[in-house]
Amino acid sequence: MAKTLDLERILHRQGFGTRKMCRILIVNDAVTVNGEPCDDPDAKFALDNSLHFTVEGEPWQYREHSYLMMHKPAHYECTHKTQFHPTIYTLLPSPLVERGVQCIGRLDEDTTGLILLSDDGQFIHKVSSPKHHVPKVYEVTCKHALSTADMQHLLAGVQLIDEDETIAALAATQITENVIHLTLAEGKYHQVKRMIAATGNRVEALKRIKIGQLALPETLAVGEWRWLTDEDLIAVQS
Image (cartoon, rainbow, N blue to C red; front, side, top):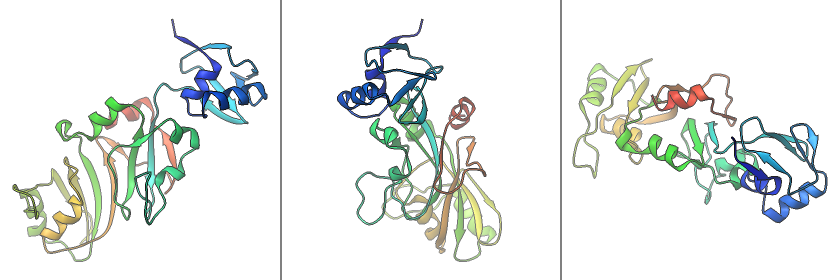
């Protein structure tokens, strides 16, 4: 049997503000539950995925944890405390930010593409920890054309400054003279840019297109986000 909880606490846990704020929303007729108005903060409901509610007209589904993907735009930072650019958290509804979703690994300010966010610590660790070797695929646009020798160099391993051992790509596929798909298991600081620099080239544009077996959907526009499906969660950990 599903655990039950009073509506005030449900809204609080889902990120709609302090318990006092949630209570005010409820008694002011700003909340419906499963299609019915509810003005009783102490009314109890079962905590499962069939629980739907609206807050000030916005529809929400109860989720114990949040799992999201975003198509990160350029010139956004993956941090709450930014200095020169807006944060990607401004692209999310405030309840998700309030409940503490975090980026799973960061993309540089000028890097675009697939980024995952969650408030599930175990999931964050599993996807981001180098111990689990979740591969990430990047579309890399270089200033100069890449030769066969350059591609072999990336696969054999390049020496980065301040690194004791060479770093090799898991896979490297040439798309055009200047564009490659590079697959990495690590997430070292500016790793793709430093690897390309080690071949005597320079990255002009960088986009992450895949994490695990989860590809960035073509239908997800730049700056948009969506919930991960059960199939997505399996794919990202495969």
